[in-house]
Image: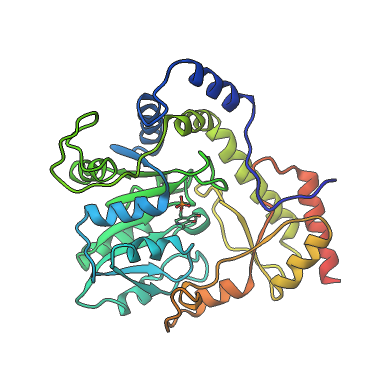
Length: 359
Ligand SMILES: Cc1ncc(COP(=O)(O)O)c(C=O)c1O
């Protein structure tokens, strides 16, 4: 058996064929009809009124905050356990991310901790559905309403994940997704913003297209930038959307196989995961010696990846914050091979080597 990477992209003939046909069709290459088609598919799939695709999720978060009127100096509540893009999306225009601890079972923002971080400058809350898991989204919504906060969902890892059968990203005023390589679907780089709010959707459409009053015309009544997508990416995205149900099923099956094979190994902890609602992004386990296990598995031809450090401990931030749950997840977390195309015999090999590690 060859090396098993922690993650690798999965395409088949359909993306190649669609790209070839598109390139021969005289398409506009920059964003146009294929992008609109891709946006429509995402709106239909999530149930959102608007979808605007962008060049990545990081800038999608920034645009959402800007559309909501968040300004330099405003404070934004952000979980301490997330990919660093979440707090960075505030930093880029001078808003201040305030790092909040997470719940131990979901690794999503803990509302009691959030409550203790509120000041008179707090204007927004970014909820990250890490790995596709989440807490009680109605409670998060009520919390934001009661504190008059703009509620932004960073659902970068949650495409295909739900709470109470409603797609994540739809509880917030705005939700965002990522289509970078290791996501449920990928367009290489790419992001999407969903919202039911016409005003936010209009503002974001202008922000991403130089502030144009509409496409194809050089009249600008607001400041905007260039955070656009391309039809080339949309062609890939449309093909990935056609296979989305299959990809979601497979990701759930893979997680279930890991649970079944790892659950009685002492020393390995997994988080409770409702596979009827959640499409696990990466398979995450928690062990006492993740670095040693990672090195051991690498020697056996198995790729893993250490979980994010808690944001407040990263050199780029290096601030003091009381976030013991985020710190524990960072200390113990390890991502196992999680590609959509992973086969059961490869999962067996990973599990056998984990058993050997403990011997
Ligand atoms: C939770 C989270 N937020 C934001 C991002 C940034 O997404 P992108 O790479 O599309 O900018 C990621 C990427 O992995 C992520 O996991």
